[in-house]
Amino acid sequence: MPMESLFTKLTEWIISHQLELFELSLAMAFTAITVNMLTKTIERKAGKNPAPAILGITKTVRFAIWILSSIASLQIIFNFGIADIPNLLSNSSHSTQTKFFRLITIVLFTFIFAKLVTKGLHHILDTSNLPNVTLFINVVKFGIWTFAALMILQVVFDINPAAMFTALGVGGIAVGFGLKDTLANIISGFGLMAAHVISPGDFIRINNMEGVVRDLNWRHTLVVNRDGNELRIPNSVLNTAALEKLTPANEALVKMPFTLRSDIDAEEAIAKMRQITAKTVKTISIPGTKPLIRLTGFDAYGITGEISLFPRRDIPQKIAVSKTAHALAGHGFFASETNRENESPSEGIVKA
Image 1 (tube, rainbow, N blue to C red):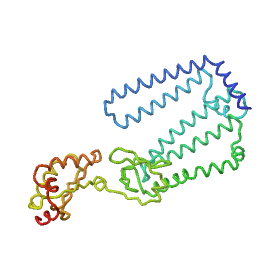
Image 2: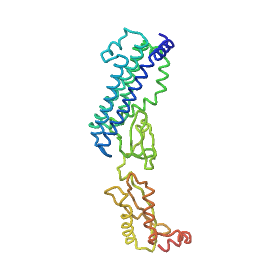
Image 3: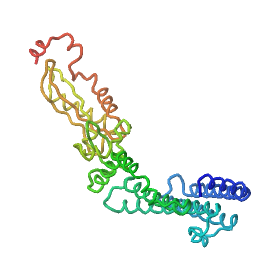
């Protein structure tokens, strides 16, 4: 049947069933209101922080209400029940109404099946050694919907998928070449996931970019740096470039250089600086870490050194440095900018 004729008859069917479709819309609206009221009631009873089990039960009940409402609406309004599905999917009838119901049935069943498979895969990944990433789940969902699309072509439009792919010929090969990079990213993503190279929550550094891994999907890996910027790195790049996994402390590390006055007691100054710095960054540092202070050498103005800070993930490193600088300023530890401008390097060396 030509596509124009099919859509013409479908349009005529919709016009002739306006009342039934209006009743179906009312039923869906009533279901939406019921589900919304039920959800708000459960949330009000459970409080502001409901238990995960309560949230899971709420989602399951909402899903069940929508399914039962859809089945009841089809049965009451269109006199179409579950027992009619096998006959509907057979090729014995070619009417526009039958084809329309075939399309709706396949799409609805695929949607429900994909939802159930997705939830099951999330549970399996949570309880296994594999990282819970969207790559594997997206590939499975793509396979389910591709199979559904092929079924629609065969059952609804009477198009043989095998014949269609054969007819594509050279065009299919050209599409394959166009998808070369996408396929490379998908294969690389599976390799990264199966080999446990990276997982969500890992701190990594690659090509002067660093951050925490949030997700790994079919095309790229999502990495978020400390400033909150999202870095989308192709999986093939992660699979071939040198990748460094960081500990939380190394990821947080920020170094703050300084120069002590040449005429100061270095040990006493370091002890006081350590005390002030520890007190300043105590509430913003990673638990179990302390600021480190070490001397690194001499320059024309005094004794050089650096302070190592370990701010938490939610604290920008610039904030930690700024707080430390403000706390240490005014204690007479450092060679002042005035001295640097007024003294020549040779004078500074003599004083040291």
